[in-house]
Every structure is written in C-alpha cells, then in structure tokens.
Length: 143
Image (cartoon, rainbow, N blue to C red; front, side, top):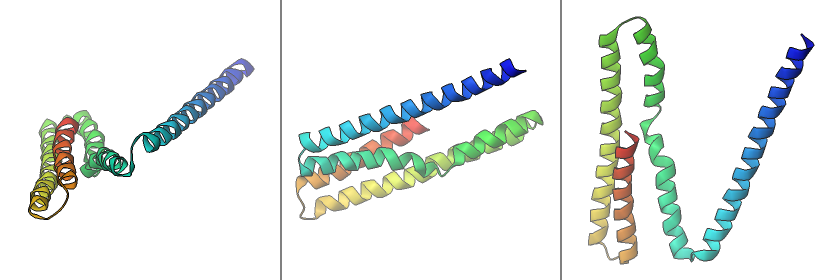
C-alpha cells in the first residue's frame, strides 16, 4: 500500500513540476515576444499588431459556449439512443455558430465600408478592412 501511495505522490509532484515549468516557459516567451514586438515595431505598427491580436483572442469567444454545450448534450442523447435529438442539437449549434459570426462580420464589413467615406488615413481604413477579412476567415476556420 505504501508503494502505491509513493507512486501517487510521485505522479502528483511530477504533474505539478511539469505544469509549473510549462507555465514558467510560457511566461518567459510571452515576455520576450512582448519586449521584441514593442522594440521592433513603432507605435503605429504595434497598434495594428494589437488589433490583429485582439481579433484572434476575442473572435473565438463569439461562440458563447455553444460548442461546449453541444459536447455535453450530444453524448447524453447518444447514450439514450435519441438520434433525432442529437441531430437537432447539432443543427441548432451549427446554425448559431454561423449566424452570430455572420452578423458580426457583416457589421465589420459595413463599418469598414463606412470608414472609406470618412476622411481618415488609408492605414486605418485598410486595417479595419483586413480585420474584417481575418474575422471571416477565422470564423470559417473555427466552424
């Protein structure tokens, strides 16, 4: 029994060390990339970089947890052999995942077209338009 206890403690310590070292390495790389991008890019280019970073960070959150809900519900209905309900849940989830992003991308496209009628620098107009394009591609990739 004590051998099993020691093995369990060893696995816990091993897991904690690997998680801690992975978190430390991630923090170091994040710090180095942050310092490097701030030094290499100027203030304006760094703003563009942050806009793209924000798009890649927050756009996946537009699904509002529907995939997690589907992943919880589908096995439940599969176990009960309710295949019609599984199909309904999947169809509802995928229609939501296409509708909300489509509305968001449509808003970005209209906003970027509106920007072209304003008297702004071309960099801002191009940046918003490219963010809309990246959003479209990112939504397609996520679904």
